[in-house]
Image (cartoon, rainbow, N blue to C red; front, side, top):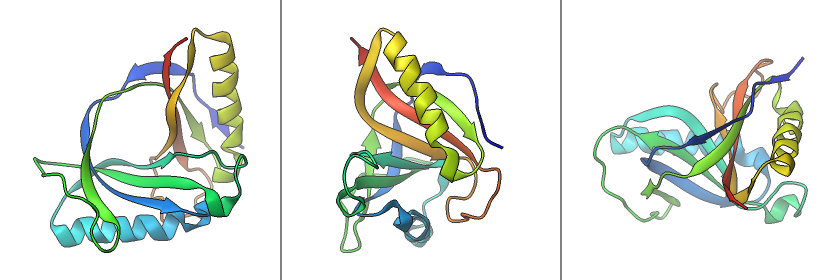
Length: 160
C-alpha cells in the first residue's frame, strides 16, 4: 500500500551540497549514493538531511541511457565549493527555490502515483514547472528493499 501526503508550496533554503552528476539508468542510484557518501566521509565532511536525487531529464521521456541526473547531500558547516575531481564528485552552493511538494510513503515502484497528484495540482494552479524535479529520500537510498520508504517529490515552480 502506498500513500501520498498533502500537496504544499514552499521555499527551500540555500545549502551547500556534495554532488555527483550522472548520465544513464536510475538503477545506478544506490551504488552512486554509496560513492557519494564514501567521498563525503573521506573528505571529513558531515552529511545532513535527506539524500537528494535531481532529474534534469524525465524518466520515460528519454531512453534510460540518456537520462541526466545528479545526486546530492547537504553538508554541515562552512565548506568551500570545489569542482568535481577525477571521480566526478564536488561541492557547490544551491540557492533557494520555490517548489510544490508531496511525500510518498510506499515502494519506489509506486512513486508515479505521487507524480500524478502533483501534475494534477499543477494543471489547476497558477504555477508551472520552473526547473528540474527532485526526490528526497528519508530512508537510506542505498537500501532498496525497504517496503515502506518515505520519499518527497518536489517540482521547482514559478508563476504562470
